[in-house]
Each structure stands twice: as C-alpha cells, then as structure tokens.
Image (tube, rainbow, N blue to C red):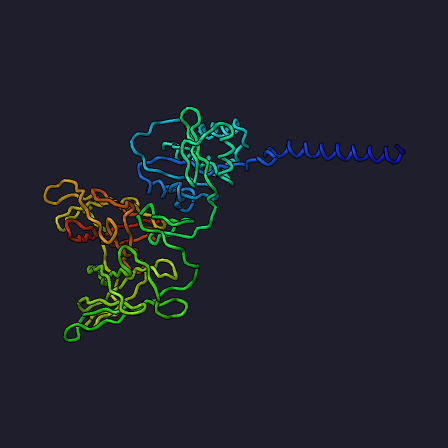
Length: 457
C-alpha cells in the first residue's frame, strides 16, 4: 500500500471517529430517543379536578388566570391558560382526599420515565393551577402527545395497557390508584362557539357546558354595529302602538340581514321597557321578509326602549337597542333617568312563586353571581318543578338605570328545575340596575323584578 493510500485511510478513520463523537455528544445533549421507533416527547397538558359547581370553578379559573373558557371534545370543560388547561368534572360524592397535585405530577413524571419515554416538558401554569385549587379533588393529570397512537403503542410495548381509550385520549392506571391520561394534540384552532357564552369555544361541534346550547360556527371577525329600524303602527285613534315592524340591517352594507340562527327556540327575542323601567315585555316577532320581523303588540303612549337579541349567520350574537316615542305621547322628549332604589326586600312573591335573590358583592367589570332560590308561595316548600322556558331554565334581562347597557342572560345550570337557579352576567359599570327574571311553572310564565346595586371595581 502506498504512503498516500495509508494517509487517506488514516484521515478517513479520524473523520469517522470525529463524526461518531459528534453523534455521541448530540445524544447526551438531547434526551429524546432516536431511531424508527422513537416516541415524541410528551408535555404537560392539564390537571383535571372534580368539583361541586363546574360553572363556578370555570369562572374562578378564568378570572384568576385571565384564560378563556373552553370545551375540549372528548376531554371536558375548563379554562385555557396559554397552551395548558385546567379541566373540571362534577363531583359525584364518591371522591376521597388524596395526594397533592404536585406529588401526583412528580409521581406521573417518574412513572413515564420508568417506561422508557422521554421526561415530559413541564408546564408554566401547572404550579399556579395546583396552588389555586389545592382544596379541590384532583382526578388525574394529563400529558399531550404529538402522536397519540404512537405514544400508546410505545407504552404497550412496555407491557402497559390503557384501562380506557378513546379517539381523544388514553387512560393508564399507575401506582397507588393514580390515573394518567395521554391526550391527542388539542391545538386545533377554535371554529365553534356558544351564542350565549362566546368565550366557550371549541375546535369541533358540541354543546355549551353552561347553557346546553349547540355550539355554532364562529363567523369571520368584522367591525361595525348592526342596526335596527323600527316602524310603529299607531293604535286606536292614533294613540300608542298597535303593531311593531323591525328591520335588522348589516353593518357593512346596510342591507337587511339575510339569515338568522335559532337561539332558545326563536330567531328574535325582543324586549320592550319604558323610560321609567316600570313596563316590561319579552316578545318574539315573526319573520315577515328578509331581515324583517313583525308583531301585534299594544303600547300605551310613552317613550320605550326596544332591545333585540339575535344571532345573524354572518356575525356574532347581537344585542341592539332602539328608542321610540309613540303617537299620543305628550311628555318631555328627554325625560330624566328613573329614580331607581335598590331593593331592601330580597324576597318577592309573584304568581304563586316566592323568589329570593342573593346578589351580594357585585363589582363593575366582573361577572356577577345572581342566585335565585324558589319556593311555593302557599306552602313555603322548595320547588323542583320548573319547566323549560324557551329552551332554558329561565331568562333574565338586566338594564342600567340610564338605559345605556342591557344584557339578556340565561342560567348557568343546563336543566335546573329548582329550587336554586343562578345567572352570571357581566356587569359593565357601577350603578343601579333593574332586572326582570322569568321562570315557567305549571304552564305559566312568571316575571319577577329586582333592583340591584353594582359597586366600583
């Protein structure tokens, strides 16, 4: 062999040794396994708790972490915090106190490592979630796999079989009864939302965990306000109103809205209140052409606010207001705001129903908790025979004293029949508000008014 050939072989050996050394350095710096059977690294996904009141827990998490309430198909409901979640199921009374979330998480990471999988990436919000819900019962901890089938197969090869598996996730029983869930990637963009709770969003169809309404496809973002034109047909002898005709118009084109989604059994909910906030009506005009609705409805002479609640197929849910002055009205065109007084009596009796309101601690800019407790007026016994009213356990309209803010709300409970029904409307500003809450019992719709005070934040 020539000296030149020996030199070439020597240089080749040195180069191969260097490449091998480089591969060895890469393996020590990157703990992920290599090769055709490599399993993608997991990362923390969520802590899953069992609680007595899911809606209250979601509200608490959303306010604490400034996250969005979500519905994850096949996984549950909760709050998104960046790329991580806290999810909630309703407690069934069989829960027992267990180890802390920090201990469960550490044991879960150790369990995953012992099966030869890469150590999961920790979550930035995990410790904060665990601290906020330390008194709640942790059901399980979950990790997300970029490729769920591959992760499950890797665990099967290590004699670890799921105790339950769905399209969305796989559950594994670890030591001491601990449950670990491996979930599919949930980072698909939001495509559906609840018309009544727009912060409840999902990448797939489903039902809102708060009100039970079917999620609808999210419309494209757009600016501008929908407009409502109102034509009032005078009543007898040209006084008051006998008929109302409303036309709902697109904010961009000004043309009548071409399509509406059904919200709580109706295309359009129309509320009518007078300037004194003494008159109230909740009616449902019938379609009379593209974007047009009509209803025969008598109004005495006066100044009225019409509040339309509807969901156009081309935009988000709308609450549109319009003031009208009826024929025959002889009062001032700019009357003073009504002199509302906060109700001292928090319990009222209407239509055989005794209704008690708990509305303490209302703050501007935050969701209120308005809890109504219902009893039979004659016997005083708590009731459990409420009937669905327009697809909900109840309806509530809440209006500010100056009539600048109005909100049509529904109960958080999906199918409450009593004796307790709660609403969680967001209160935009401090001040006095009048609300009308409506329930249906024995075929009768019962409307009960209250005046509440909202404090500065």
